[in-house]
Amino acid sequence: MIQPQQRQGSSRDYVYDIVRKDILSLKLQPGTMISEKEIGDKLDVSRTPTREAFIKLAEEDLIVIYPQKGSFISLIDIEQVEEARFVRETMEVAVLKIACETFTERDVAEMEALVAEQRIYSGHNNIEKMHDLDELFHETIFNKCNKQRTWSVIQQMLAHYKRFRNLLLAVYFDWETIIAQHTRIVDSIRARNPLMAEQELRQHVKSRFEKAELLEKYPNYFKKSDASSSVTLL
Image 1: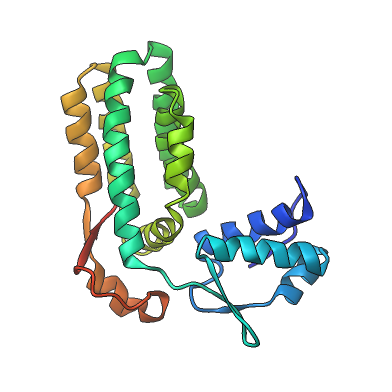
Image 2: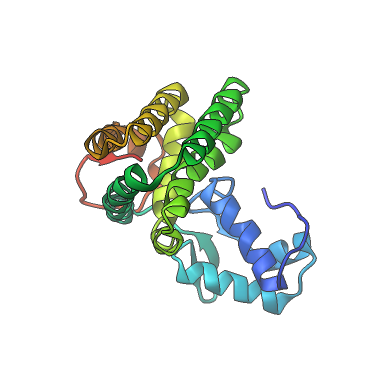
């Protein structure tokens, strides 16, 4: 739940960053009420910047503000999850081809170090740290290919996707499988084999989950949708 942290930036950004992180990690569960006053009091921030942070979160569809009723954590929208997954997969396949052409041995060694760190934390069952390292693995590929802005654009679409992924990984997913897939992606880059890299990434993405089971277990977390009964996870 919301806890004060070391302040960086403006008061609005301070509130925004903390609340957003807790929403994405599902510490703040979809559909629950969230009070501007309580958040402001806990973080020792005045009403105006807290309100501005809530408005910014509402613009990202992470909070829904109902006049005269209050604010609520938005439900996960499966259609947004699937669209974000499609964009990320498409762009990462393209970036991996660049990685196969441009990565140096030092770049590959840094990727291997990230995978090694994932193995360490998976053994400690540190789920939050594993989420961060999984994200860092993919972000590093984009950064080393000078596609930081592409990564930033993708991130703007991923709010619902990340919540779905974090729920899925916490409940069902096998981190050892993810680490093995990351290892094969790095091996493909070292071999400068873009076809193998694409195949490994698509296999990584192809890990499928029947949405109906997750919806049945957490029905109050999801926006009602007529989308298909499965989504693809990256």
